[in-house]
Image 1: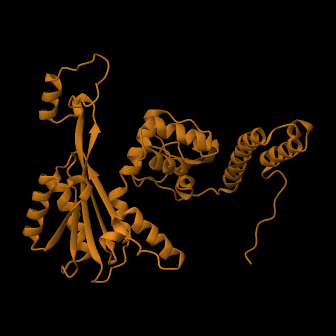
Image 2: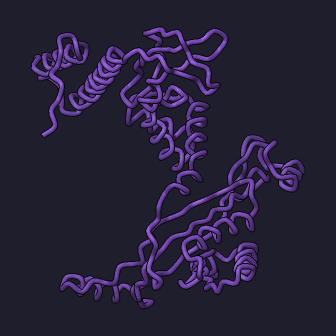
Image 3: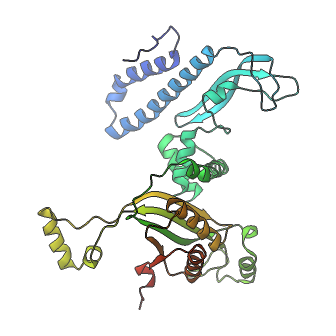
Length: 357
């Protein structure tokens, strides 16, 4: 069993004090008179503050234990001969803001170097990687305003819209590097190699529209002065092209397994009760995703074919392309497959091509 360093006098003093106050409050008549919902809210706020103080105490202990070095150089290769303790910087965590104190190594006319920043893997901005992760998750679900509200609900931390946008950009900048470093296990030759493409309209600022769209937007006259009426479009969007590549083990199924009548569903439920459930749908494994509002459809499709060829360089597997009937995408897919000498099977989404009366 790994040992640990015994607590020293003064270490974690602030968090101990906070815990004692929380303990006293929990045993008080005031807490006893709260309803369970009120007690839950109070514990969330007070508990978050306790965690923040524990984080701060740990950082303070790390700063106190940092040893002076004599071989610190910057990116310019110049040795920093002067050292100054207690140089703070803020760090906003999921529990609230803390201060990181460390040694600054200095040289006249040159930027300071802080080795502890690298040891702690501190971000360039003041928001922690935990908050950056939450931002990436929430920003992908909707607007920046909604993302900020979700983060505040989860952590109590308020982040401005511009700061959220910058955090999301920092996350997006690492997508390609992530895929380059990620090792995807080779799939068996009998597993399908699936490529899927789609387009999504993204509302843009007027100056970011493509020339043709901007011209259409300038010529458009809205029916209403303050907003668009139902079904009205005024050329505010650019189309982002999305692509995905993944591996899938084949799962033979019948049409009834996918679309069933009420009678067939009832029969399937009866079979499931007897241990004869319908086959599970194919599972996507080793997903690779990309999207762009700057590259055109052929360029994005070519990048997806590059990833697919990396997985199956000898073209031994069955290549399946899933799209929604967009003719431009179909033409780009067939042209790319022909250029590379690859046989593909194109599957068009049934719902998109189903006639609607």
